[in-house]
Image 1 (cartoon, one colour):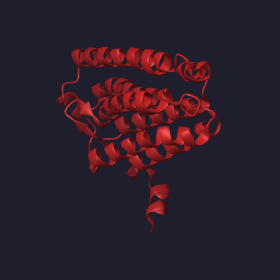
Image 2 (tube, rainbow, N blue to C red):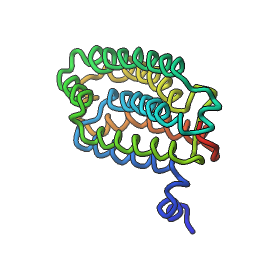
Image 3 (tube, rainbow, N blue to C red):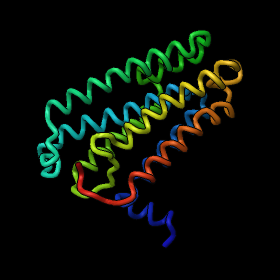
Length: 211
């Protein structure tokens, strides 16, 4: 059986592949319709980790392995507080300030922020389903280094990478790198796609109990 056939016939054994495939397809469609910016990708990475924290906190009381890891209110408060700081920074910097002189791109970012981008929304729906599935099953593909997950690592690196790309590539050529310009948008999103797949395959090599 080919790899592709196995992924299609046994999706639960290939969560990381489906996660990357759906994210890539929906993001590519969003680029094609001129609805993707750097904010789209980084804001999605934020939601990916935020959803993981919320779903995990809901299910942990019903999962023995989670109780053994002693996830409690202090962990939740610390995680959500840190995520709130990231959210403010991402919205202010990547959503508004970085595109201050480009009203069209800022408008696109605001549509993403307020869930008026259906490609972004569909991505989030899949993420919610994926994390619920992971927590409903004792065996699932998980990537974590203590409390520092692969999602958080992607978020950290993407913020740094986004700042570098914004200041050294996008800002000097604002007319070139716009949402309705297809190939520049692809070049902007490509490093984040490579980052996502790289981290997933580095830190999700095997099945373990949900933590």
